[in-house]
Length: 110
Image 1: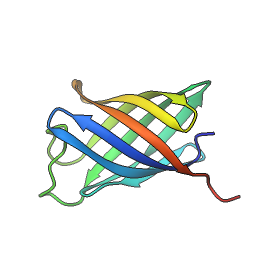
Image 2: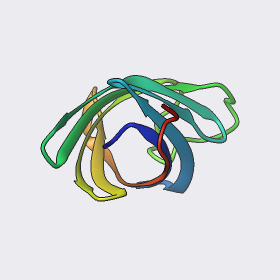
Image 3: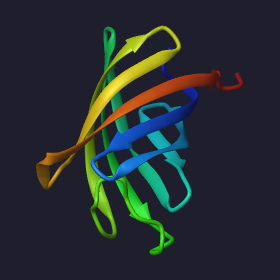
Image 4: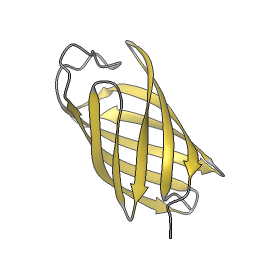
């Protein structure tokens, strides 16, 4: 099951970084040192697809993609147990992308 608390590791054209994300009932919430993530996701079999709004709240923290300010990401990945390996691209510039590895740390409380 995808719902839960995940560590997010990513690598883009301008560096690498990490953050956290919560997957809850088709919605994504998360963030890192300078950005907030909100969006939606869907699971089909062993694959997950997400559309994420990335909001910069600390302008001095650069994006690993080289994008300034806010942007949107389209992400597609394969679920392998407690790990998702994915690729993402900026919605307005598909040539700008990143590789992601998400590792599940906790299930949601019931």
